[in-house]
Image 1 (cartoon, rainbow, N blue to C red):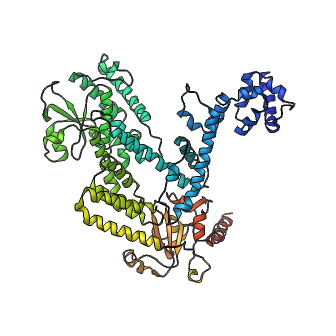
Image 2 (cartoon, rainbow, N blue to C red):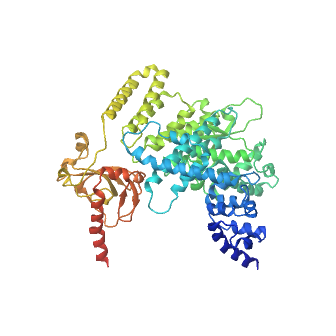
Length: 627
């Protein structure tokens, strides 16, 4: 009977929502139902927020059921934006109707800003305020971020340009928040020894779009600690570490008891869970990200040491980090408490080498050189993070294919957050911004930022006058060139000088010589590169040399290349090109080709019609042959 009543009422509600008239025939039937049944109906998911608003205006009973802080509006909010519910405590009073309105407004603002970014950032003349519209938004930032995530999660191969800029904005927002958190963390006293927390901030900053949190990483480590306790119980069932409660620990002073913990740790980490140092792929940034170390169960000395240190301290073993050259280590004190100690009173632990315990002589043998006693000393959190970021910085300098230099930019930001007056790194950052600033697609405001950095360098070290002067001169010249540039170059296929251009933007191509797949995003009637590039690329050896059309292409390996027409051919099995900049130029992938977004189409207004003809001729003919 109750089920029948609910079904009957469910049929009445939509009609009631549309008519919103108290005299409607189904109203008396509906309002006479028990409150629990009415609430169940209103929370069933069949009604929109607009429906709930209309229903609540029909009578007092329904208005009371749909009160702003009640279950009905909470369910509307949860169904619409489920990922946001984790930010609310079950015990908090929440005006769910007001939250719904604020979130809805934030979503509209987010979409308005994302829609504007393509036009603003595609052009070579980009306003210097960059992300200022985002920084000045009213309302909770989590609502704005949530809308950006919703855009990124849109299904299908459409809205590529929206996704491209939503990703950029989200990247910026999260990095700013993480950097502020890191700076606050670095203000902690020197005896604040949360090495893991600092490492997680670095991980988050370099991977802002990943769901990384200290809580989740700590939970994974707690799971390893439980396994160690299980193994420790087999060694010593009365070991004091077994009595530690979750989140609480104290240091154990007896060396023998500490040794038992380390034995259990080595068994669990290296034998049971198969953690190991990554010797095969040592120079991979993933080795420095704690969430990846836990997932892949491998890392380099410093990341493996931080994991080892965290577990040991939770179980009462007071290990300490040692900033040993070329190979980060941990040290384990063997001397009596309060005694005067030297480097020979410690055992040194190589977490990268399966927890091997080393003497001073063995440490020197490990790196193949003698070092001073000072290098065996313990280091604080800031020094540990400096070394981690220094490793990332070295990897960033090795980047080749990724022309955005994202890792280098991120590691420079992190290093300068810790040591803002490092002249050489400020110079590197200035050169990097200058390099990025001269790319057409990059923000013009980066050029002006170079001048700010250079001025700061000159204040810190007047001896850098030559390098600073060189960069200032070239930066100002770049600004002057930008002022002289006017309008957008429009290329018409019908123009006589473009008669030899065979291919169009959006077509999926294959390189005849190198075999890579790519998509065309621009073309020139002849090679527009300088003589040095033409000579280095051996263009003169081509049958048609540089007097043939050349195409700007996005390649599946993430690179951007400039290919001669005679080296390209249609890809008879077109596929999506997984390049990070595809969305900057194209709005949709149809399965056979990409459709240019509005900004690219302005520059090549006649190409889309040519693409349709090509697709019809090439792929339709192929389909007929198959049939």
